[in-house]
Length: 375
Length: 167
Image 1 (cartoon, each protein chain N blue to C red):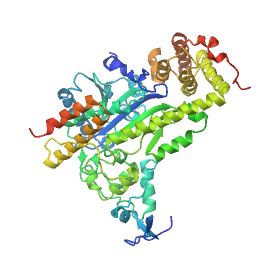
Image 2 (image 1 turned 180 degrees about the horizontal axis):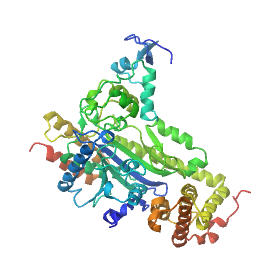
Image 3 (image 1 turned 90 degrees about the vertical axis):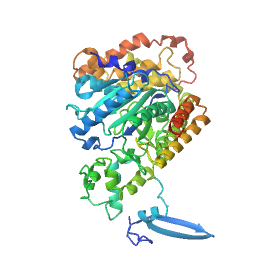
Image 4 (image 1 turned 135 degrees about the horizontal axis):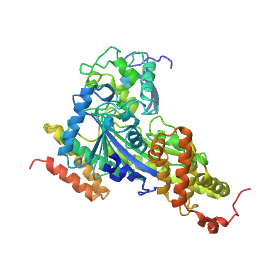
């Protein structure tokens, strides 16, 4: 059976490029951490703790309107490649899957709701991690979805809660609200105009932090940044959410200005960069994931600036997800050594651009004016 | 950092240096983190981007007591404070009670605060004051939803409030 058939939109709804500023903001994610009374937290939980937590969660599934009819995948029962695909679709964390190569711990699971785009990881670092992942900039909406499910879960389950410290978590960096909201943004304008370090420093001063593609500790690739709240204690959830939303809008504004500066002062170079990136993607025979991400950054900038008519942000989003190793292996129906994977990646990209990425209108378009081109 | 004496308790780790101007007279005070906190002088919440275990190590370096004794142990899960310092992960909800003397300093450093002000969780058998806190929280949320003209959400929260209020 295909596990993904049971997940709404196959867990890909967040790629659809809907939502505000979807060309700059790929996705918004809000998660809260909750733990149950009477059991050790994830890293110190024994098998019986984890199984008891999962049992309690299962019981709440029967009683909660929001959880009923959803899909629960227990990680040890899920095939290895499927687990990796779940991770590549950002539906589960590396942490839930356990050490690379090892089997996931018993009791680890993920639940997808039937109606709302919201899921619950069970027995991750915290007993429950409720998360909503949406396309575009939709911080408030994601929070409301998570909050609603949290209310239902809280009626059924005995949360570990402290009058002073709030919701208790394995790591003290999450205690209090347990809330982490993050916005996944593409900021090539700020990078190319060398304004990015100033922008990132500014985030730090405002209590926000940034990370790479896969969250904590991961590298920044393709000018994608994940911006999130740094603190979880001492401010209300609504404050944290509004603050992130406000600051992110400011960053988007700065990014758009930087792009205008690029077009004004270096239009020729910028257009050349964008078209070269497109050309490489369209014809390359081998692409590493990192190279792909860097080229996609150029093309995404082009689409956003309307320099590549006919290409949609949705197509670019799909290219990021379906070209990761487990997705390529799934399509090939077998494991792929790296060199082969690079060839499969390039071939996937060529095919999708041939069907969804016809930009041939360009030659008659507005770019014929070379007056601004630089030598 | 030089060993500056805290003028309140005499310990040698004054890290908060306060310059005050009162009636046009400037004065400078040196306090250790603990005494400063007791006087309500939070060190500026410079929430660092450092991984937690580095923050813990940094705090141990700055002050003579290392946050807490390594052998102190949680009676529920058996986690020692020493292990917490190495891993940055607490073992269970009870750890927050066991180490409640040491955690506020750390939390202040990480979050710039030691007190939760967000959602109030209502246990299955709530006391009157827990109920009141919970209702306060919901009313605050309601006000916010109305302000932002999110009437669907406001209606939802109003229902939650009604279900809790005595008939």
